[in-house]
Every structure is written in C-alpha cells, then in structure tokens.
Length: 101
Image (cartoon, rainbow, N blue to C red; front, top):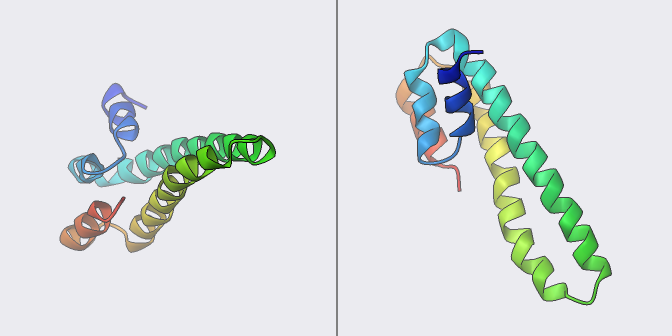
C-alpha cells in the first residue's frame, strides 16, 4: 500500500472520511478495511478499559469512556454500510460517510 493510501486510512473519520471518495475505486475497499480494523482495535482497547473500571471503585469514569466507545463502534457500522452500498452513487456514499459521529 502506498503512502497516500495509508494516510487516507489513518484519516478515516469525519469529516475526513469523505476523502476516501478521492481515491481510485479499486483502492477504496482496502482503505475502508484498514480504517475498520483501526477502529475495531480502538473499540477493543476502550472495552478493556471499561471492564477494568467496572471492577474498580470509579464507576463514573466508566460512563465517560462508554460514550466514545459506542461512537467508535457506530463508525464501524457506518463504514460497513458504505462498503455494502458500493461506489455507484457518490452523493449517497458521501452522505453516509458524513453520518459518522
């Protein structure tokens, strides 16, 4: 993967997620997959922190981390929708990408 593709994968979050539409169509699924993998890793780390906080005496902190963890998980679902939609309707795809929390 080229440096441009890697940079696009790192920036796969709103409002920058729409930058994937500037990539050639054959590269878009690879960038989506990399973005989803990074998000899944992040959600997993946050979930681990949530479990530790649940066992501790700081339940308030758990609520603070739970919100961003849920938003990150929602981004993965939005990217799955984008992959399912494909690239034929650029405007519809752009609207879906802009929905990310």
